Image (cartoon, rainbow, N blue to C red; front, side):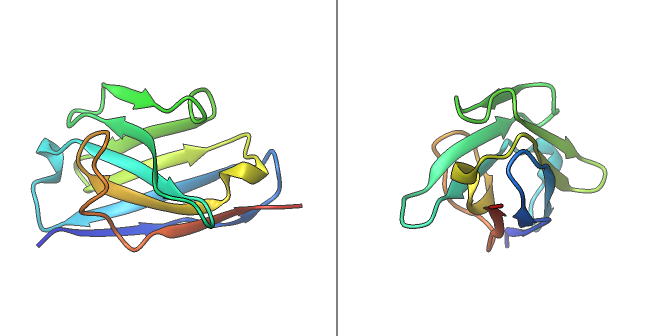
Length: 117
């Protein structure tokens, strides 16, 4: 059974930084493409970033490029998303997803990021 557990969210001021983590189990993480998606309040899910199984291929949505960094540790089965230069519009529930761009399932329970002064 695929299990994904996100952590690291919180309340941060505009311009601040956070690092989100996603601990994976129940599947072969090191062979899996992984993504981050988010859901702003009152809106639908939107794709944020994707990383290939080896960690060298990464792609970002326009709003994430230059501010967010996706990475992974295959030895620990952990996916990361470093957020910097945060804006109020980055407020959302962030989820990790097993799959490539366009996949929204399976995903974890999410971790809330709130950007506010």
